[in-house]
Each structure stands twice: as structure tokens, then as C-alpha cells.
Amino acid sequence: MGLLFVETLPGPKVFKCKLCKVDSASQDEIVSKDFQGRYGRAYLFEKVVNVCLGPNEDRHLLSGLHTVNDVHCSSCQQILGWRYLLEEKNFYAAHRTKKKEKAYEESQKYKEGKYILEKAKVMKVG
Image (cartoon, rainbow, N blue to C red; front, side, top):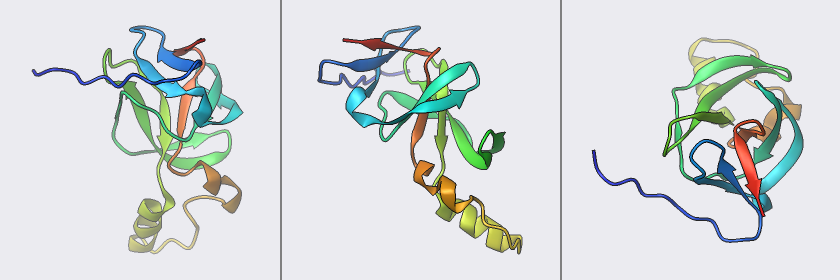
């Protein structure tokens, strides 16, 4: 099975998995606090740590259709949120199927490569 490598984040305010208390993100990495997740309010982060990604899937969210991966805590495997995939993966898929639509609307491009962590699944320490 092997040893689990867990990154500890510096700083006064850190978000941790509510279930196992492993660091997940720094407050310095918050892009927006105005998001809606499956279980209520959520945060958009530039970078997260100690997570594993699920498979790619197209999901209808409040802002439209997005290709995302579920984000799991690397310690306890609880789903913490999701990651928005970069457009280039969708761009090539769209051209292979000869669709004329873009994978994302222009107004949603800022989310690409960023992470949603659900407030119900993480706790703020500090």
C-alpha cells in the first residue's frame, strides 16, 4: 500500500478536510467565495493540495455545461468538490466530433484549471 505523503500548508488560515483534518488549501489561493456546490456554498481556489482527481465528466452546473473532475481528499477519499478542466482538452474533443459550439462560454474561462471546495466538506482553521 505504501506511505501517504501529506503536504502541510504554512500560514495563519488554512482549509482542511472536515473528516480527517488534512490540509487542503490556503486562504491565499481563494479566487472567489461566491460559488454554489452540491451541498451549499463553495469556494473557488487557484491551487489545492492533498487531493486526488476522479475521471473527467461533463456536468451541467448553474453556469452551464462544464467538463470537471471530482476532487477527493487523498487521506480519507471524501469528495471535497471538483476541478474545472482546461479548455484545450474540450477544444480537441469538440473538433474531433465536428461540433461548432465552444466547450465553454467566454465568460466562464476564468474557472479553467481551478478548484471548487465545498464549505460543507472543509473547515477553516486560523
